[in-house]
Image (cartoon, rainbow, N blue to C red; front, top):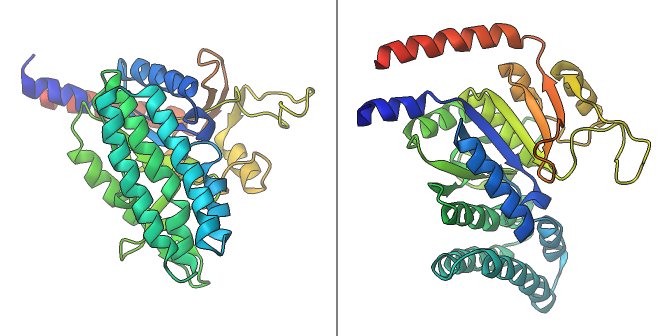
Length: 327
């Protein structure tokens, strides 16, 4: 097969969005599992990876923001730096560790600058977003060390947020789709991006965070924009339960759910995810699979859109047409 045809074949591979939460990127063991999942998926599909901050770091950033003296802020800053330095030292070789420390230093210097701003919403968003700006480069370098052509991507380039009439920030899904489509079209077919979850930007390029659990919403928006075949939500629990299985032994696991039902329940805060997490994938008729990094062969919970059979038929016909054109 020629180089051009190989490139086209890469473009036509099934696209999946893989989202990893804080506990799935927060330790050396968790990152080893993540690397195994991503490399396995890369053999049969084209994965786009979305990551949260390391577990606990967003809480530390909130605590940092609330401190009113430079001395107390430095306590939290040192804690955040040590967490990332230690994990990088544990998982990366010498050269990649040095590269990551350079990136980490840039993030911390930027965070120090933000802390000097006058208190206000934009200051808060810039502080909270720092966790993802520190985690995504670390994950990308670790995947690179495992032979993956990976690079981190700042979601400010992809997700557009606008101010509503009530003064709250909301995602403009049309602009987000356009920006993400352009980026995806230019992305090399062999490249696996590691995208910062939880954040986007306004028209001035200023960062705006999407709220607690926002990385799920980020992944769902990206899946809609690129027409992904599936959105895999990787966490440390094997699926969705009727209650937290770590606290309630009697909690039952859902094997299957209709996406329409899951969306309604989630909007009523019954599934513990971001309120808008399912809206983009419901609109695009994309199935969601909630899976455990600790048990990747487990069934998890498969959330299927009611209209999926029609979409599968359309996608199959489109793929056949594109393949004939490329031949």
